[in-house]
Amino acid sequence: HHTSQLRDDKLLQICHLLRDNIDYYDWVGFYFRNGDKEELILGPYAGEPTDHTVIPFGKGICGQVAVSNQNFVVPDVTAQDNYIACSITVKSEIVVPLFVDGANIGQIDIDSNLIDAFDEADERFLEFVNNGIAKLF
Ligand code: SME
Image 1 (cartoon, rainbow, N blue to C red):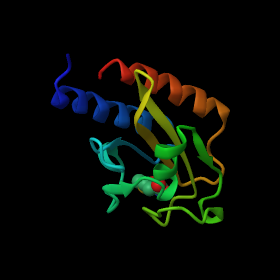
Image 2: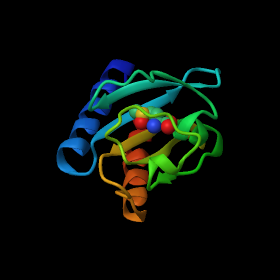
Image 3: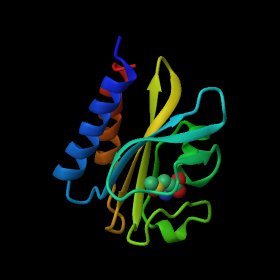
Image 4: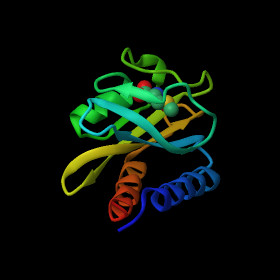
């Protein structure tokens, strides 16, 4: 029902809405599964551009969530061995999968320049956001 352009416009607005209104959300973006391939492609985002526009399943926090189907909260990115650094200013990260009709089609990824920025309230909030976004698909 939504064209992908209209959907991407909305996703970009959501990225900016979250980044502009929550002070510890410094980078907000979406990654989506690339068809049947076992890789993620960067979607709409707000914040510094990243070199990591393609992430293989299993690589980094995002790639692990693509496989686990579970939220991943990282209080201290320097303590993670399977981590892809996008910016040296980032201290903590949260990734919450996006399910459409039960399938993990992608994720919302948020980086913070604050250590240990994310808690259960962020998980519940981002699950709520993703549930709303699922209706665009
Ligand atoms: N840090 C992520 C990569 C994406 S950047 O944060 C935008 C990871 O380890 O998967």
